[in-house]
Image (cartoon, one colour):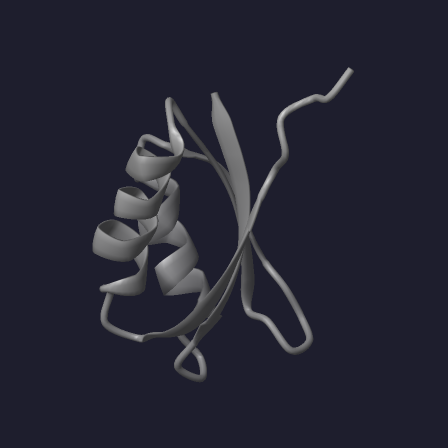
Length: 79
């Protein structure tokens, strides 16, 4: 499993609308609106990194009213 957190900025006043749409994406585990520099934080989980990139690029970043994203991919547990 590949897990990532995405920080996202939207057009002004669109935070809740975008959050609701993003929550409907099956790979999204949670999404929350924020106050501050970023408007949302998204918790995503996929089977692999390539599919994760596809979800972020094609289903999130391409959305109208999404201005920017920063993705942080969780490292696999190292023993």
